Amino acid sequence: MESFLIAVASMAVVLGIMILVHEFGHYAAAKWFGVRVDVFSIGFGKRLTGFRRGGTDYRISALPLGGYVKMAGESPLESRSGAPDEFMSHPRWQRFVIAVAGPAMNIILAVVLLTGVFMVHYEHPVYLDQPAVVGWVMENSPAAKAGIEQGDRIVRIDGQQSPTWEDVLLKVAVTSKGPLDVAIQRGNQVLEKQIQPALDGSDQYDTVGWLPDEPITVTYLETDMPAAKAGLKVGDEVLSVNGTAMRSLLSVIHFLRQNGDKPVDVALLRNGQKLDIKVTPVQTEDNGQKNYRLGFQSRPVQIDKLPFARALSRSIQENKRYSLLIVDLVRKLVEHKASIKQMEGPIGIARASGDAARQPGWTPLLGLMAMISLNLGIFNLLPIPILDGGIILLLLIEGVLRRDISIRIKERIYQTAFVFLILFAAVVIYNDLMKALPGLAQRLP
Image (cartoon, rainbow, N blue to C red; front, side, top):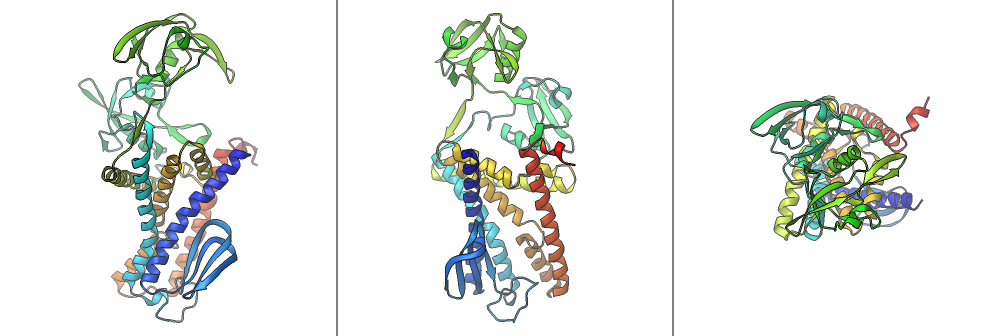
């Protein structure tokens, strides 16, 4: 119950801030150009309290999930008097600026938040920004079937040259209905491969079955297990087991599964010196599955604290990369090369917000807020009527035609778009429920 409340509260705070920043962008631009703002609301629904100033009703409403701005005469579905302070009475370029100001504020907020994260405490796996060298290939996985081997370096994936592991993971995340074109370097050869990602369980996320080549650095020891008793220490790096080089923690797990309870020789690197210890695995049972274990964990992370200029530059680069990824995902959705099941709705956002809020410090939640803010900004720029991008598109069309599109046509466009968005939201929420409650699909008639 506590986790549920944290998730809900975190989602309300995250989405609330994102939407309020977005609406403030519209509000500030409208005020700058002299457009009358009738309502600036924190929350939706019934008005609880507030005050009026300068013709604007600043209010707090019953549902504290964001907010909205209502400008005079902005909707083609409402009657207009032609007053000079109405939205439609202003030049198209001013209406364009007002429309783009909301998404722009979300993108600016994403840059600001991520800059702060990079300056204060950016914690990430050490392999994430390293060249994409494969440390392990899971049996019977799409990567194994395509002939990918341990030690291969991914030199191109889906058109992107020299990717890092973060690039690879993101490319896989937005591909589901079509194969990935991959080029791998093996020795002096460059081999072309096609890999079809497979769905991973109920989460509807794609997996290829390869793991990064990363140092197996001991980050935690179980005191009553063989590794600690044999003298393994936190900070040791496991180089090999029985002379076989280990390039991923899963490769150690796989080796022990094949080896059973026979003693193994583990080669270590400690403070620059190589050491050899002998350890005898013990059999344990977790969730009904028997495994042979040594009793250590390896989750090496890197913590960055950058000066302002470098943090800002990196933030801009990261936001640019994620923006292009979002656009690529939309393109693949249109081309039926990606699935709408990959998109997160309110339940997914609540789960991610709750997980981030439970982590130590503020930076995990700020990083998540940056990504959600960027997504909200880019999504609102899509050329769909009702969204800001749709308003911008209509303004551009009217600019080319040098006349306004008739109210009747706009009404039909907005009504159709409204139905589309309702159906889209329903599908996303349904998929959210299927991922949160994986057994629900089987119980539905």
